[in-house]
Image (cartoon, rainbow, N blue to C red; front, side):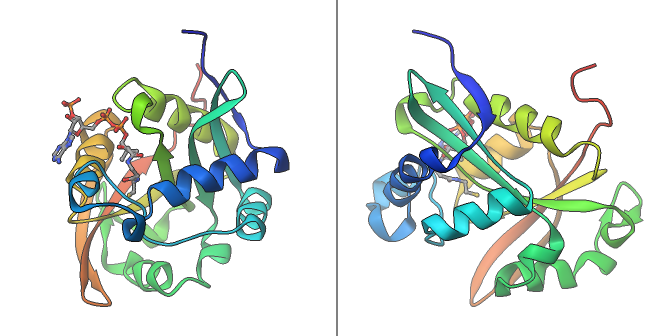
Length: 189
Ligand SMILES: CC(C)(COP(=O)(O)OP(=O)(O)OC[C@H]1O[C@@H](n2cnc3c(N)ncnc32)[C@H](O)[C@@H]1OP(=O)(O)O)[C@@H](O)C(=O)NCCC(=O)NCCS
């Protein structure tokens, strides 16, 4: 197997990212496939471009094939999404390492998706490191959310990436957990 490259996405990657994203949409998966994770909200080309311009879209590429992606956005950009707006309204009362989340310069992590054949191979860690490297100078913390009925994602983000469980919240009748992590100043040192 040739090496996987982790890099900032370009417009030419968007169609492949969207194919991967849509394959993993909750509404497109069987109950059994959902056990291995899902993404909840659809995206289009222009949203991906806006996210990439706002902060970053990182791709994992093997032989020109996009095998994974992760997005990162600012709070200013994210406030247009009702779920994220609600989550950010909880920052003041949510403690991360002894301080309210609102005291940090934090960004939002997600969505993230890895092609089935590449799960459990370290692609998640590679995407995460590339994302941290991209945003390290601007933020000192990151926040993610995971649906409670996505145990694979919950396990991957807490056990593999070391994110901390901060609190639970409900939105539109669904339960989520909020996760936090520190952005190291120099991720590659
Ligand atoms: C979520 C996702 C990014 C995680 O990446 P990954 O490469 O699959 O993660 P890993 O396999 O390294 O880690 C997942 C862990 O959960 C475990 N796991 C798998 N299915 C599980 C389940 N149903 N319940 C609990 N744990 C589960 C795995 O065994 C593994 O743990 P282990 O290595 O200690 O055995 C990937 O599965 C994915 O893209 N899923 C579809 C989209 C998605 O869910 N995105 C996240 C939305 S928040």
